[in-house]
Amino acid sequence: MEGFDLISTGAWSIIPPILALALALITKEVYSSLAVGVFVGMVIYQFTLNGAGFEQLVDSFTMVPQMMAEQIAGNGALLLFLALLGALVVVIAAAGGSRAYAEWVSTHIKNAKMAQILTAVLGIIIFVDDYFNCLTVGAVMRPVTDRFKISHEKLAWIIDSTAAPICIIAPVSSWAVAVGGYLGEGGFTTFVQSIPYNFYALLTIVFVFFMCATKRDFGPMRVAEAEMQQPADAQRSIPEKNSALEAVSTVGLTGAAADGSPLNMDTIIAEEDELDEAAQSAVEEFKGMAISEKGRVFDLIIPIVVLIIFSILGMLYAGGFFQGVDFATAVGENPVFGLCIGVCVALVVTALMFLPRKLMTLSSYMDGVAEGVRSMVGAIMILVLAWSLGGTCRYLLGTGEFVSSFLESIGVGLAFLPAVIFVVAAFIGFAMGTSWGTIALILPIVIGVFPADNPLFLVAIGATLGGAVYGDHVSPISDTTILSSAGAQCNHLRHVATQLPYASVVAVVCLVGYVIAGFTGNPWISLVVGAVLMIGGVFVLNHSPYGAVKK
Image (cartoon, rainbow, N blue to C red; front, side, top):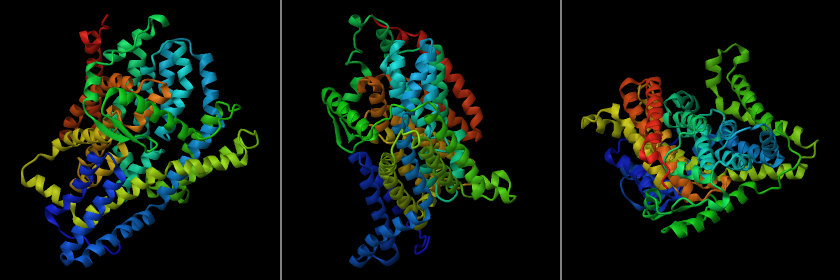
């Protein structure tokens, strides 16, 4: 990088990411933790290069915005895509296409199984953003699932289990571009290559459809489903004092809601009140606009299809495909610019669809664009800070080289590291309640440990992404968990308690998969073995005392 030199700082090189991680776990606040990590990294760089002193401390401080500016300048297209994608999401939501889809499915669904499967299908279709997914799927499908007596806990689980998992493996999504940014040069291509290794996301989607099709529920979810089938006056709530809730209540976590307000979780009663308020404020903040009553189903489908098609065409155009470059090379040449082309075309198409039919006025359309851009500010802040920490570790301090050489010197087999990374990412994701923050903290270290040509490089990337999503899924302070509860109008702690066993079954299977992949480097063996173990585990749990409904 211009103005920076790579030096060897030894064990000091791991202090910035470890400090950022420790602060994030203690404070549950990602922005300041990453910023402190960047500053400390600059101090270590200056003190190692020029000695300790006040002047070096001042230089360290001035290098922080310099590093941030370098990262912003080098990733302008990525930031533009995130901002425009946020605009597209809000405009689509305000046009009323989601409401029209709900009316359509309500006339075509004939039974509870179909209702659950179509809920999952809608969750897969809306892959551009997880917030948009959670709130849209909940609003659209809740009246339908209520009609077939599907519990709100089951609906919240389906929403939560299709939102982040599909976003983290969809190349045209805010998550894809963010992760590609964390990975640095050629990051988008690396992200696409790592998709088969994201066992948790892939197997969770399989698990959702399998459970919806077979209805072999177990644990607290089976209790919730059984209670929903009882007459309204005989329905009872899930016991508050089950083991899962007791585990949550004793943690005493402190986090932040989706709107940034503090979220104290010292007792179950305080949790319920505050989380309900946080969920409601998150919903109101996300919607923020009047929803048109005149939207149609195609108002939801066409913009997404246009986004996909023109993003691919944009990648091909930017990569020179139409000038004779082969397809694979063209797609990987400048993919983020291609995504920008796709989202710009999609915004133009939505304007041409919505304005003449008076679904929105020009003023409300532009308000939606502005609101959507604003909604991405938090994600952009995390990205810039994560890039800066990663750049400090990678281009200044040599963190990755030190960690790699240290592991080799003590004889730790790298084949086991993907499984370890999965567990660590899951723990951090649970404690912090954020997938993006977890990924931002761990990927800089992972990239340094595994060279890009190492067979375990993609396995480790997949383990990081999968572990972060699992930790986010089972965390009671996760924004997507809160929004899934809000979208399904489900008691938040009941959603956490009923989802925990389901997500954990998939996670245990994934852990086995990463051990296998660590030795074979092949994702398909792990996925096949994982799917077999997962389905077998469901049958065992469904027929065990844990799967029975207690009277």
